[in-house]
Length: 85
Image 1 (cartoon, rainbow, N blue to C red):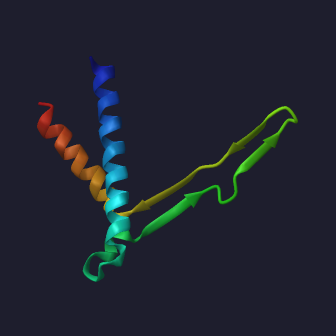
Image 2 (cartoon, rainbow, N blue to C red; image 1 turned 90 degrees about the horizontal axis):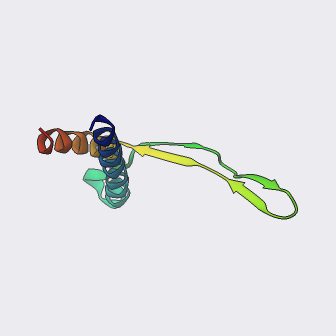
């Protein structure tokens, strides 16, 4: 049962991260809430390409974390703790 709970918390936190990032992006144009989109982006700026002739493999990863995504993770964790007692 412990493994199932671990996967659930990971999924809930990922949903909170995605929702927070979307909310932060939408709040960027609103003057009073534009601070929610303040954050950092890191990762591979250009993708890694492996060309083997028969097939081409392209790998890339970029992560953008802003204040709204951090708040989303925190709220998702609180919802998980409240709902799973």
